[in-house]
Amino acid sequence: MAIESILECSKLIAGKKLKIAFAESATAGWLASEFSFVPESGEIFLGGIVCYDVCVKEELFGIPKETIEKYTAESSEVTELLAERLVKFFRNDISVAITGLTSPGGSETPEKPVGTMFIHIKMQDKKYIAHREVFTGSPKEIISQTINKVGLLLVELLKDQK
Image (tube, rainbow, N blue to C red):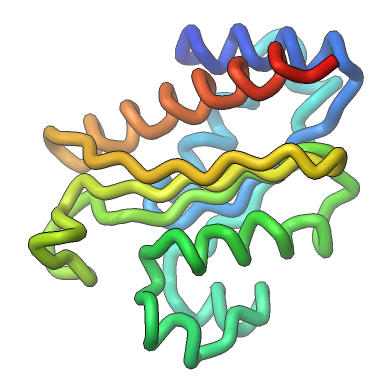
């Protein structure tokens, strides 16, 4: 069963006849998987790219190495570029990109602790959400909270849309 916020936003996406695609780093495809469980999946879900390793961000998405070195692979700046460049691979109306830190050993700092997740949602009509949040718990709990937040942000964005 899909996460409730994903069920709700999927109905809104289908009602507006939109298509969604994902670029996932820290969530490693879990978000796309959640969208495959909704009744509207065939109408709305195009697919996703797991860009967990930095080389995928650089080589597939063309994120400059300098950008990653300056901001890190888990940053708002890199997540924004992933969302913007996702339309290169899909004919989608909604792009969702996620990076973040679910466990120690990455680019965590006191200002960006483990649990920090970056979500960027871009719509073709120029509506845009950039969200940063620090979640707590195990890596699995952090990812689950992030996916729920994506659903909530999409609901907010889509209800706002005329």
